Amino acid sequence: MTAENRRFLLPPIINRILTLLTEQGFAAYVVGGAVRDLLLGKTPGDFDVATSARPESVISILEPAGFTVVGELGQNFGVVVVHRDSQMVEIATFRGEAYGGDAHKPEQVWYCDDLEADLSRRDFTVNAMAYNETEGLIDIFGGLKDIEAKLIRCVGNPEERFGEDALRIMRAIRFSAQLGYEIHEDTEAAIRKLAPTLQKISAERIQVELTKLLVSPHPDT
Image 1 (cartoon, rainbow, N blue to C red):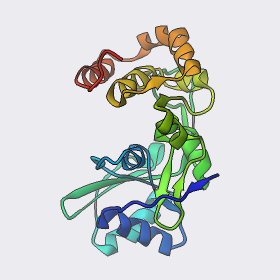
Image 2: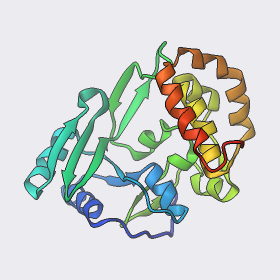
Image 3: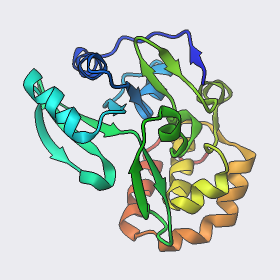
């Protein structure tokens, strides 16, 4: 696990959530697309938090501090959505996943206490980083290096990542178009091999990704 010497200014509400959770002995980080955007000098549209705290602990810590719980995705996903000061934040418990025959939904989901295990289930390296003000950037899978090289690369084995969730094939192409990045050769080879598995994905989900791709800065990438 590597921590780059990088520091970002997080919104006060996000810092408050991270502080409240860590003061109770839990690990807590901003994760995913928000970290990528911060590294690119962009203002994230939203911030997602990942934590070792179970959903019931998240609620018991944040509600007395003035946060309103507006949604729970239950034991299957371990996500609590909270609201305060006109801002909603998703807070997800570290988790692992196992896939069966479904081309999009995990067959099993379980909680874990390890950030690395949580990040390892994510799609691409540029989306598999974490950050808090105490530890700085946590970049286990080389996301920063791929940002600098302008590459979309799967976390781990690309055939496994696309085999778990075929929609990731569309997401890889969409991120490439949005960011103007090349797709890593191993990831591209897996896309070509597993493209027929997109037939198992609903037309509605395909349409969402296609729409995002077509309105991206580089739809011809």
